[in-house]
Image (cartoon, rainbow, N blue to C red):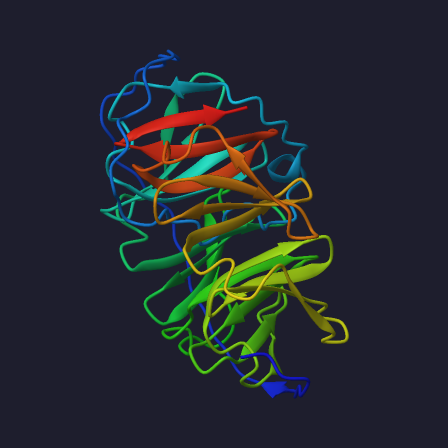
Length: 300
């Protein structure tokens, strides 16, 4: 529940790696029928679009057109994915990291196989991949393969959501505490308890956006001013929220995608229920990218 009281203090931790192993690499880029609508696990978007990477936040114009990228079923083992520096970065169930060319669907294993086996959260921020693995935070430079633990290690096991904003990594714990971590691994308790019930966190336009107990809020992390957006309980059925190009992109439990502006006005993207098989959602190069039924799609 939100309340006008806010606090301050310290604590957090970290470590990272590199990885890979996928099905055969086929540079196909074919349109095909979107998988039939069915109920599915909520899309994994722990790091989607809340990064400060410019191409991840390029303007998105939704026309309703979509296209499959790469070979059907090549992403069936993908558990999380983010867009950064012109590429898609994905982690497989075996903990391997891949880099995908969005133009062709060609993918390449990055680093050692299985290095992210304990992955819980993935975020792209300032050309680095930030991951929570087990109870530790890591940062990895995918271009060089170098990685390091952020902070002293430990303390991240209870993290329910994290997002990058203006070079700072923000995270929320089950007790409603909000933490911030800088790129050197220094962490600070920003607020204790006022984000309890948070299920989704995104960074956009200098603000943190949260869904708490079915309600949408924005919070200015600089002064902790906040406001509720939309009606009470309006976002109760949302399973996923990411940010990109000045909008929030949400999926509800029925597989319907929404574009939500900063005032809380929602617009349905595509047909209702047409994202029922979506398991991963991110943005890159002005498009939405999804993994549905094990295949990669882009929506413009």
